[in-house]
Length: 126
Image 1 (cartoon, one colour):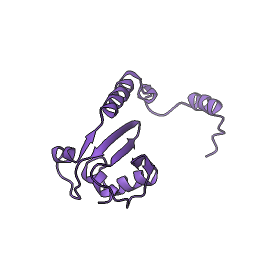
Image 2 (cartoon, helix red, strand yellow; image 1 turned 120 degrees about the vertical axis):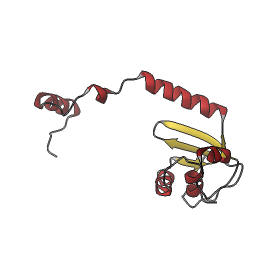
Image 3 (cartoon, helix red, strand yellow; image 1 turned 90 degrees about the vertical axis):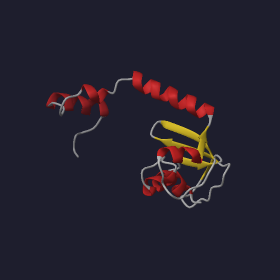
């Protein structure tokens, strides 16, 4: 079974094209090796998946080319204990950190834009 189909069926990605794009950008590895979207996977393979700041390390338990419910998709893989701990730590850290953009209301003023350009070294000529 192709890795892009399996990632879609296991509900890591919403569409197969998103799964293909992640594989092509080396955000998905099988047995610690970079792969292509047509890579055939087997039961027992270790798959490393990175989506944004979150990372999963899962072992393939089943193969399916049909996308089912989340409870059915969960039966296709088993996440390692270390992966669960790391992902939970990342999520907790994200909860504690404030997003700077949340304080901002609307567009920057002219003064704020000029200050941003000084900091970033940009000229503002887009």
